[in-house]
Length: 478
Picture 1 (cartoon, rainbow, N blue to C red):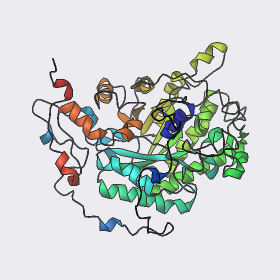
Picture 2: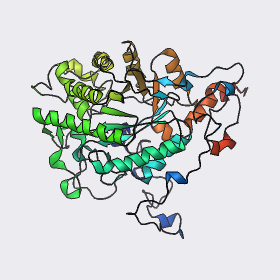
Picture 3: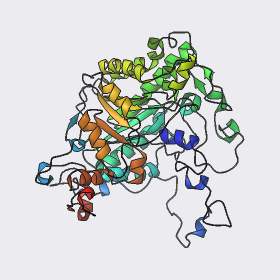
């Protein structure tokens, strides 16, 4: 989700912008790259399989090669080099004990949900399997499928994933089953979301005419009249002013989240995560900057956290043996307006919320930050959001694990920033997004960096696994 926020915020020429958004200076003849495939390749056969016919690929066609091999991403004691120790990042059986799910992760590496804006009518597709499959093969402990709208109007863009209708279940089940088939021991979850006042916006990849630069109109396939929020406060100038939900409609939205969880568990997901970060509906409830309500869902801390906590309780009550995670923004990154008397959601509020979620049986609190207001102040760098996860850890959760996200891949040495954070006790899990997209084999590279040998891998890739070498820093270049 944060990818969408950064793409929209970035200035021209920023590394966060897709290539087609940047000016290329290598050619004096054109400022934009050609989008014609024929300018780069030609002669390839067109796809012969009908788009509306189920693929003939089946799980039963796959011949497993796992017997006698540890799962990808594991670090058995016998592969740890003499004199080295297994990094905490690769602890086996990381137990999620707040719930009764029995879930244990094979390591502490989690693929964070990343919007792909590539779904038609909310359905997962071959893109999502290809996108997520690369990390499954390279040994991550868990993969979280991107934010999926619990209502059609709760999507960020018309191309976002959804789980608002029963017809979505089979496609999600196919995706989860395929990932588990090729990567035994992989934990798979899904993020349940409602975009709130940031709904019906453009995919960052859209090229072409726009009636309005900040949102998709009804005529263009959007739902400008159905954008809703806790209060009628627009995200920013030029954005849609959302309709404030009534008290009854707030209760109905809770039911949509519960039904989303129903469908997710029917599809075989191991856990669901409630998305209460990045300025979307649940985060808009939490922050005084966006929640101006005067009923039971607004005003006090208790009022602003009511929808989230009520939804947590309802899902935990209905599914006591399933794992529930929550993502929050540890801060609005808007503390600078507090001097003007404006209250914000900040680190102190997050630390106040954490014990309540712990007491309700939330397995993981996934601590991100920002995304609520356009005037936020962020300085991205490796581990730039870690302090908010560390703040939650200071509350000493009894059972709930704490995940850190935000350039936790580090910079020069894969795994070192993550391992240091775990060793200090700043967090329990490491969530990675862009770093994983840039390096799908990050898990293996982190193992090599931290102990001089790759973790276990998929047997089909065995030629890359035995490579033992000292970490790059051990080399003497003097």
